[in-house]
Length: 272
Image 1 (tube, rainbow, N blue to C red):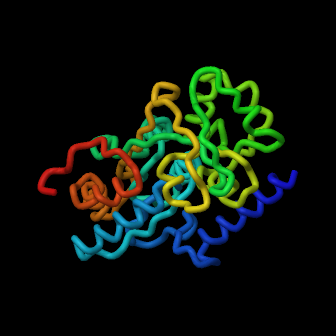
Image 2: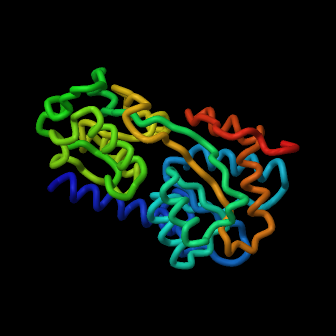
């Protein structure tokens, strides 16, 4: 109950920050108005995409895009409901496919941009290496604590984590002991604050928080490939949308992604 209560407070705080009521300069979907370039992006991209966005401004002289970060499922549903996003970067193929099937993206602009890994993290001062493989007894490692994850039915990191635990035979032992967050950064926060002894997040999230340590990395064959696709939305009328997506594919943006631990999946865009 304590974790659930604090999780609610944490997510409420994140929502307030997204509405501009706190120090973090994150634009919420409801704020996206006018002709400024508006990007909807998976929460796990924040550090890297903020840096890449700054590079776009420096290279092109264009105004800084307004970037709304949240879980991919949340953003896809908001685009479906008419939120004025010019481009979408998802943390998995499923939610981009969801919009594609509803004819809400421009298929010719879609590209698989990045790859990632999922890892097991613990609070920095309590970290002990854990061998992740078949027969993993994660319940024993958790003790009386809970496992922080993104929502296992909708958030990509949660779906990848559940798939990995099922493949390794560890899911049944922990499925009733999961503290589910609305996005992967919410799961990271639970571990960072010491409210959960372990969590499953992307390796890029772990690298962004000095209060957590990676204690194990999930085998790549234990879950579907982690792929971040990007596309311009069908209803975008902003002429800079395609240019921004092209910049994300360019050699200029590459260092911002690689520094955070992402794998570059696509070839640089022409003339980049």
